[in-house]
Length: 425
Ligand SMILES: *Cc1c(COP(=O)(O)O)cnc(C)c1O
Image 1: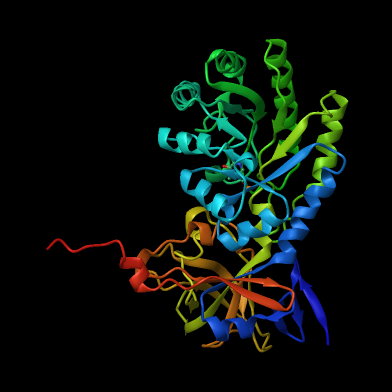
Image 2: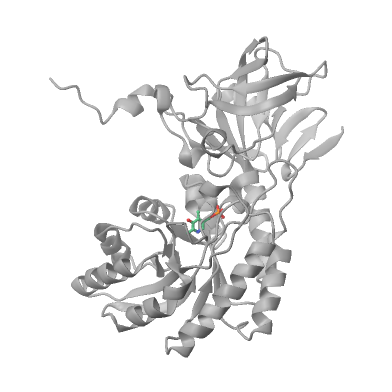
């Protein structure tokens, strides 16, 4: 038997031309559960997590999985069992994390638009930290905490104004972005936080963007955050932890980002050199923990040769895989069973009635009607952003663990979709 690993997907292998997730043949899963079907490898998630754990070996550190990347309960459970905390951005995510077994103290609450109701609930369950994104939010959180008779632990999310060199929709640490408190306002905002009742300053936070593949922006941002730590503490507000956010990219198309372990070796060297090495560190990785742990299986419905383009119409669409339509995101697409034969160039598209419904452009494939394809790097920002557009039920999800395949989400039916709707009479 010849076994080759898929680039960037260590637990997805080709065995005699058949694609496997760990020890499960993907063709068998598609036959049993239908398509489109998301398949995740637990070992891949734990391997990605281990790179961060190596990077922080011997440090006081907490890894908080940014669950918006993939918030399915079966995925969250893997990270709960591995001892992770969670970074959440809504009250809904808070409840999901609790259902999956997370403890309140291991949850950090980020996001620019927290409502009073979300704050109250987060205080009630004792979240570990509110990452506050504006001075107005500090005032509201203080009021809510006082009214609830609680103390809200807070960090301020600072905007270091560095360019993460990623897509504009997923860069968050530039001056023109809606996120964080401006560099120049930071000391002032901390003094305000320290003076307000019901708040306890515990740390500082930044998150500069997503799908970052260069270490440069991270190193620059760390310098700026450490400058701010120094300035805030000089103004009399001690900071217990430094939260450096998430954003590390994955290999979608051959651009290989730095490993989490080597990146953190460099960042920690910088931190040590400036004398902050004994602080408590927190990070909020999302994509880099799950993105390449998942694929989406889809069936070729029709091949449609055209004058300018050949189309390969598949049964997965932009409602399942929104990244290409949203920000020209790239996913490699490979056959589930290699058949050889001459490759043709296709645009791989879904059935949704939008020209933006494409999954891959100009792909060389030797596909036939009825073949199965695997859309790679589909573990992050796919199912969690999936919709019901065109009244398409959301796909089923499988978590593979060695020789076992667990159905962690059933395929959504039309009855599921219309359950909350009423006609007028
Ligand atoms: C989205 C987000 C993350 C995770 O980003 P990834 O690119 O998936 O690692 C972390 N922190 C905050 C505040 C976020 O909004």
